[in-house]
Amino acid sequence: MKKLLAEFIGTFTLVFGGCGSAILAAGYPDLGIGFTGVALAFGLSLMVMIYAFGSISGGHFNPAVTFGLCLAKKFPIKKLPFYWLSQLLGGIIAAFCIFFIASDHSGFQAGGFASNGYGELSPDKYGLKAAFLIETLLTALFIVVILSTTTQKQLKTMAPLAIGLALTLIHLISIPVTNTSVNPARSTAVALFAQTDALGQLWLFWAAPFAGAIIGAIIWELVQSELS
Figure 1 (cartoon, one colour):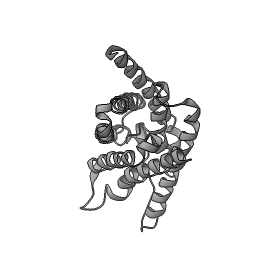
Figure 2 (cartoon, rainbow, N blue to C red; figure 1 turned 135 degrees about the horizontal axis):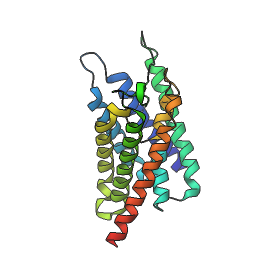
Figure 3 (tube, rainbow, N blue to C red; figure 1 turned 90 degrees about the vertical axis):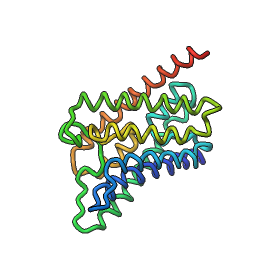
Figure 4 (tube, rainbow, N blue to C red; figure 1 turned 180 degrees about the horizontal axis):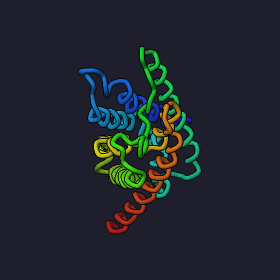
């Protein structure tokens, strides 16, 4: 239960910090943090939560990460559905809190509500193929970084920083394309409150991160076999 609670709190913080910054602060007149600030908010949220709870639950906070670690034999598959449920609940509760706060502001309209999308729902109108490819590639990169930094003893103390910076970089690359997912829990949580067809496009933001997790785990296994 401690592990599941840690995953719940960590995913809550990731969604609340990252999506909350996008909804509440990114476009604030004169003082808006912009998409660079949002990218940093996601990376910082993940970094501090891994430092806080990594020793308890492993600090996944992302169904695709849990799946990738299972494939790499770094996490028992029997625990996977429980982690997924905790991550989804943490993300949804965070999205609800953001919605509750934002809706108490005059003139609030949920709109896209920091959801992910392609085509008309892409920030810069990128199509489905571009969205699927970038989400897959960046999730694969993310999995490789996580496995590389958490399995080497000399890097473990720096792993949360490296992983947080990796997520920041991922957002800097892909916010214009899909508004950046690489995390099905994050995508699902805000899609529930969006006033667009975000739920209709949600399949991609499960399928692509999971495909990326498979590729990342395969790359890691190949690298490990070369090193051994």
